[in-house]
Image 1 (cartoon, each protein chain N blue to C red):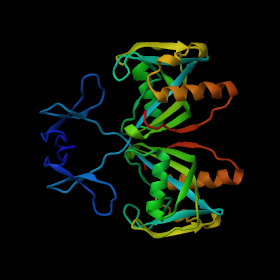
Image 2: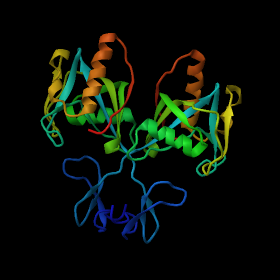
Image 3: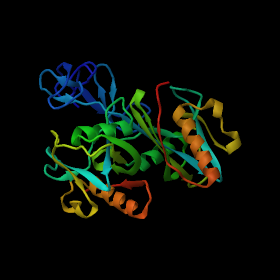
Length: 177
Length: 177
């Protein structure tokens, strides 16, 4: 941030009164501009025991596999966001269920909320963000070609929990790469 | 947002190519500025069966009671944020445990992550943000003077779960007031 989004004047880093961290403060109108972590919401869609994964058509990690997930938008709930991202990235309509993982990734200031989900029908399709969208049985999950650590952790716990017949919540903190 | 935080030129609302929602886009450098929900992290600190609550010394809801909680900062995990907010607002040092609630509040674009926590010792104190900080036994919880619906829901589930000897996770979506 270089300029105040309210008035257009330059900003400077300063610790506001009563605060404990430097913020971008406007040199003209004194507006304080906060920057906070972002949430990524998504799910593991299941259809007849198989799991829907998407091959990324965009950077980062183009060509690698992920569950449908993306940045939560203003005005929606976490579950609405997970269903919206799933539709956008895979064409699949889902009923969002229980959480699998909540993963803090402090080095990129993100928290991922990743849910279980039931596909409402078998439909899925290639999208602008996914060059391939496919249902995998457990033996076929492309463990060596997953896009992110968050994907690996979530699929691992999803599969383990399903084997044990439970729906656990796993709160995970990821250290730096 | 009126001005581009990168270059200082005016912004306009427009739907970027490949997107589906209007964003603030710079009329000069074409930077796209996203706005996303914020996370509030906090906890229910317990000491010898009693629960630590804070009387708000600041708006909104000045004078009403809350558990310690506040906006998550960049570079921290959700649990680190919950412990930090607890120290800042109540002077109490805690070990953060399991989640009680995850509450989406779409009309103000927030998600609250509220944990159980064990105080490391009995110390707690008035702070800049809390005019009174006090341990309550269950019968004394000031149900009629709680600051927010998120506080009420979380304390309700905390107390109910504790009676039943479980540590449930409650995923809650709050509608408009």
